[in-house]
Length: 514
Image 1 (cartoon, rainbow, N blue to C red):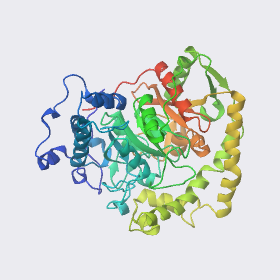
Image 2: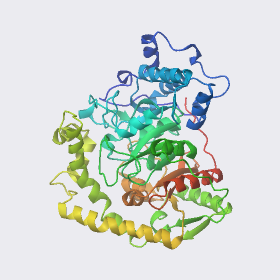
Image 3: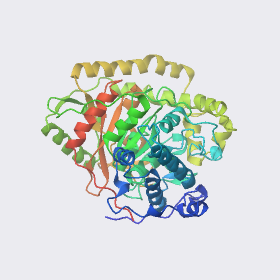
Image 4: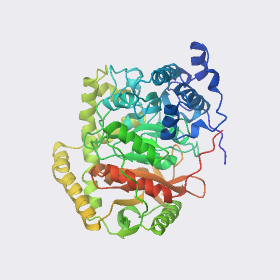
């Protein structure tokens, strides 16, 4: 069913026009858009994968300027999704023209040459503000790119603006009270997930084929699941997170959103220099672990139905599902995940602000934050709140429980011989914007954070690589996804396996947006 997008509901936050998203105004400043700005007659350029777009530009079949122009027009047409905090068409087109000039003079080109890539507005960029989605940083302009952004530019990418997010990356909705809620392209009344909701919405809506997200406890994977796209959270530490608004260095990890696993591999190749591995010819004999007691309990009925159907397809394709529980998992997560994050954010965020010259300290930043973030920090982060983490509790989490969790997963993978654990990424389909306290799941009340984040917490806490793939649509047209967590440092093998799994799962139709 087609959806009419609702008007921007950013409240007191800046409007999209004030964020330089209007392509027409920029075109006037530049003397008009190129003559080939009209939609392509030989195919829908917005539907290209990143790999296809780069290949066309390399062959000279498509200019970077034309491609950027088409994507900018798409962003303008779908601005009510509120996927971007800042997007400057003049900057994008200037970089695209430079890419075309480099190709014309046969200069060396990188893997991402001419490719527009949206960047989550929690990573430093030299030519855009880095707001972290919070009011106190709305005018913060870092002096230089975060290393990850710099590496993407070196590979030829064009920074395609900064995407909206859950404020300070501290939540899973992307219902940002300062800059407005991000809307899910499959149903704009619903959340896209968070915290990297803007990047996910942009990729799902065909505004760009590949984008930068970031994940501490699900912020790549939940939006990928809710927006029906692919998401990859690599082994913690695989990509640099320097120059990113932090929560915890033990858990923080940047990673890509895309619509194909091949594009996730392209991103990984560009950042690490490691070429993708060969795709398995089939799933015959591939062992996938299933632990139902933790990951499958209490699922929404539609999530359960789509998940079981997808597992049936994998089994039919030859995969062997090995059913075995992970011993002591729930207790280890309860003793580790929140303790590390709620402690580290007050330390690491203060350090970030000072290191990069943000012009504001931690206390002032929190005082200026939106009401929901202030309440969360007062409860869980700041001294005196009931969730405040003492130094002793933190040391217990880091020195005892976290090593035990990592050891438990090493032993589990060794015992099962599994290439990956497989489970539904979330317990529910995307909730409505505003339903952020309690949900009804299978007829029972369930806390929002449990319904959305229970399943993704173990992988990121343990530092495992996690790959989210769409599994199908619910009966009311909402995405459902599987997550595949591999052993630590198995990133390339997991992505190669993902390509094989991708062949067996039903492709999701694009969201129908008007």
